[in-house]
Length: 279
Image (cartoon, rainbow, N blue to C red):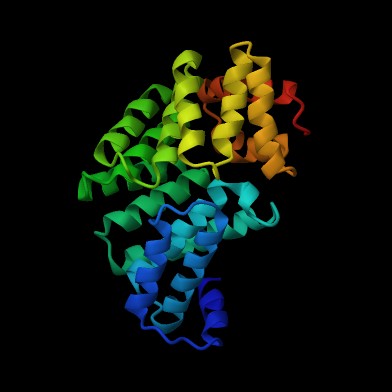
């Protein structure tokens, strides 16, 4: 799959060297520009780099990171059917990166994030721990290690981990994501009053993120704030009208069978059903 994707781009004229293409891709991923467009543009840069050097670990990890960003926001994909293929492409890329650079903290971090989305939770935890061992200052690895813990019924670990990431890199473009992770962790353990301001801050930090609006709608509904719940959901549905309950289930519910987690995530899912998101 990876070879086919990069070979397709080899048909196009490539004027830049591998290092320039990788730098362009990484720049887009860390620029602070949100939404799917810069991620897809970065993905194209990495694939062009791989068309010239199939074993470049930075391009491989960058491609995996792009895939993770897209599958983490499934409403950014043209069709839901693309989700499994995008996960497979990302995991294939990061495995290839680690085969070349086994001590690359970034590659281990991307491996962990993609494995978590794929439901390979034990491997995700191992990869994210390795990323933080290799780079203790990796804010993104700390944040997603905490989020992966929710799927083992340990949501109490999530907000502290996300707040560590925020302390390490308070102005990082991913700040909105980390605020969401902190809010999600609080909501899952029933701390709705603490979750709501974090989720609100997430939506303000990055308006392109749809998932925090969904969870904010659930938090407001749980607090009895029907107007706030409807407002948050309307904002989400105006941007992503085709989202369904089954998408939420695939994105969150199906990733873990842990009984604590299933009980906790149902607490988020039920208000969304009550607000009228179609099945």
